Length: 213
Image (tube, rainbow, N blue to C red):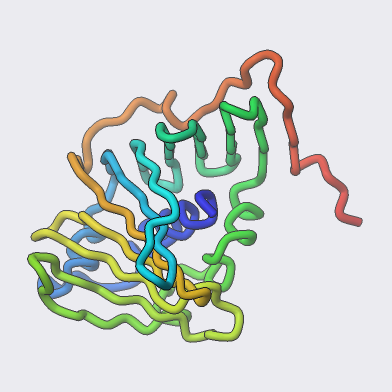
């Protein structure tokens, strides 16, 4: 579940930046208009249909155009999801297991699969500017293909021009909320962040080598 939600968020950020002309009244458009890199801490919680919290995780993320990211879950377990834009590494440190995938293949396995390969997000989502609610300016994205989507909607909350919250309501009645803090946009990031050196002694599953035929 962690990887799927991460891939979905990253896809929305990287792909939506080429969709619209800038409209200062739309916080998503304004945020993405000059997007080059992002650094933030995050807290992610999974809530069931009864409002009960099932899981809480925390970590840090780094993102850089074009398509590079480093997403680290630090507590209660450690997982790294890293991509240099072409290769994706998913490292479960506690299990000492590494999965390697092509970036495109990985996204196809995520909820973002229905919009993979098309930068025009409006072809697959209905976008609604919900306005300011509890100090956040909200954009709601609802998938047009409801039969294939694994979620009902995605909501992005902005404080001024900074992305501070993301809420995903899935079709099982569960809600995932991601709160971002210490957000830094367009800072210079080291290129080494987006490469992964395989530790000795880990179990490696390289899905690029699997012959699906």
